[in-house]
Length: 115
Image (cartoon, rainbow, N blue to C red):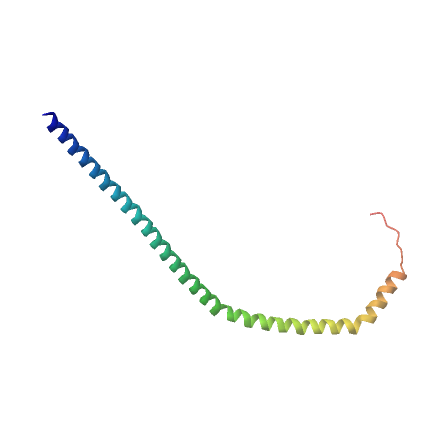
């Protein structure tokens, strides 16, 4: 009877070992599958991100053309105005310098009045 009990106990221990191995394999498979799913998700996210970046760049390029044309027109207008202002400054330069010197050299001090 003791041999039978010993054999039964050994059978139970073997079954427990096999069950532990099966559980370990299931855990490893699950861990592996989680990693694969995470990698797949990361790839999908990167692909989606790249697609949206390309769409944005296309949108930006399409809509910035009008801005560049407007910017060029504004720059040309500004250059024309700058030339006009410089010409007016050169034309009036002598008179302005003369008036400034006269104002500085011919000071007319006025005493303050009580309010």
